[in-house]
Length: 190
Image 1 (cartoon, rainbow, N blue to C red):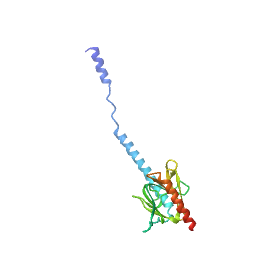
Image 2: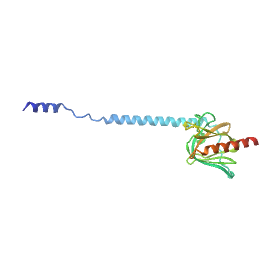
Image 3: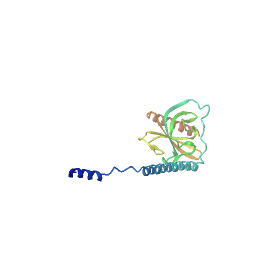
Image 4: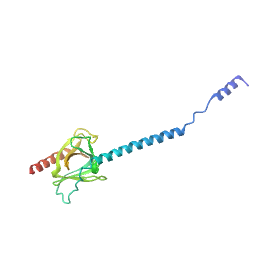
């Protein structure tokens, strides 16, 4: 044998095959990660249920009357949640008020009808409406300045803020004006 051949043979013997992937360790890490994510999700769900329990003193929501009267305004958009009035991060979750959803709002002389596909509908009688304004955030949802229609209303012994965003943001100003005129007229009649 030649020297060159001996060198080639010895270098080939020294080469090792690539490391084999340790599948057991990888699967173990994936299972551990999945369990951690499941634990976090479960804790969030329990926190949501606990918040609902703490807000259990909130009375049942009103249903729309059979004859609400002529329609003043309608709006199609998103419902972003309800909070304690003036505290934009104190989400109300009792009776499904914390569930974000699509929304169809209808304002009549009787009040504000909130229809939410896939979530609980509710009605705010005109006598319980307190204020309407444009704002930028509610319940952890932050939008551009004036991008959110916030309606303040009384339910039981609490004042609540509910946030809506129209599919056509130009409608917000008309809603604020109409709601506030309606509220002022209702307060003047009391």
